[in-house]
Image (cartoon, rainbow, N blue to C red; front, side, top):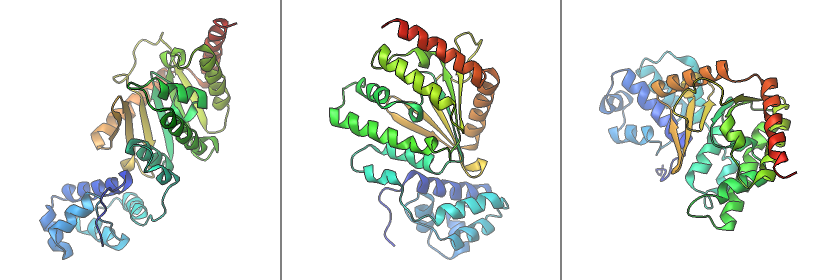
Length: 287
């Protein structure tokens, strides 16, 4: 079987979990290879995501590594048996890999939680607002690139607008006031955010300036829950693109951050009132 030149994020994650399983058992790659009767290079290829793995071999590896976490093993088996490509693959030749990997994570999540300090979460943005966010990048993007990115972002929204994937958004007051495209665009965005907050499965919680402390370092974060907690992923937006974290220590840290947000943010109803008050202020600037 030919090796994958560019394994997807999900294929790489499966390999990462196999490596973790092996290391927790105290086995080296060569030791595991001997137990399986294969070449050490094949272990390296599986753990890098460059080669696939059958469900049978995965369960054999779990047994050799003395892994007794059956829910995790079953979830990894499901990943190993996947053959269907996601809709995001249509964009592989037109968008950077970060866009595809975020959509891939969202396409397999159990629940998504956002923490945004600069702009409204992408899955809740209007088309005009999203276009303004992409337009302000330096150096500027060509108009066609802005349109493609905006279309891709709106298509991602079908995931939560359908009500099949629960979404929680902790939005800092700064993100509610930051203008992309001017006050009219912002007012329309806030109105859309209010409408979305009333949809089944969507929760929007505001963190006002008045809150004493703000957990974390202030980056825009997304916590993507997998079928089992071990397969959760944290995505962080940075100027260079998206960073992904999945180590147990990083997941534990960010669970604490989101738990703190849950205890300090306004309630859903209080948040709607807060958003309405800001929308009223914004509208007064162009009345």
